[in-house]
Length: 237
Image: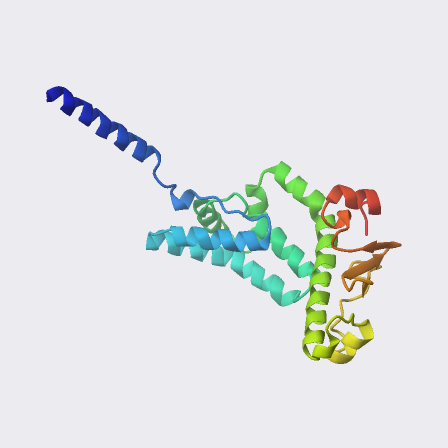
């Protein structure tokens, strides 16, 4: 009986040790994922929900309000609905990639000591230099790809709306003139955005972009890969 009790005690202690080693991660040490705006927003929501302590959660949300939400609101106000706006928002969000709530709170507290400085200066200092360099190397291609991809999404939306207004148009491919007549001259994606771009629907009714003698669709490798972009366009618009 004593031998059995000793075995039972040993088993219970082992279980307790394993359970303590498998305890949930402190939400204040969870790392923000922010390779793009969607991932940033989802990560912030997940972490905020995971922080059960009211005081810690309030400190985190207040810090975010100061160093992220505020600057993002300024970008959206000054550059509404533009590819430049999206690029700058993603660049700002990326600066939080890999940071924890405690680091964000500490950053906000440091920034409060000198609010005359742009908070992005502190964020740059928090990042690994190699990480910054890699992101800057991608910035031109990301802006170029983002402008075209956003324009393609807009064209799809306009085409759907154009067809929904008259079911007899189902299967038809609208022209630029028909879209502008229906939704206004500014509805169609801007030419020269990026430089030299002209947007049209191809023969299959899919969005395409004519630029520098090339026809770009969603399947064009340069739209998804920086190296392909540099091979095709020489790294410039």
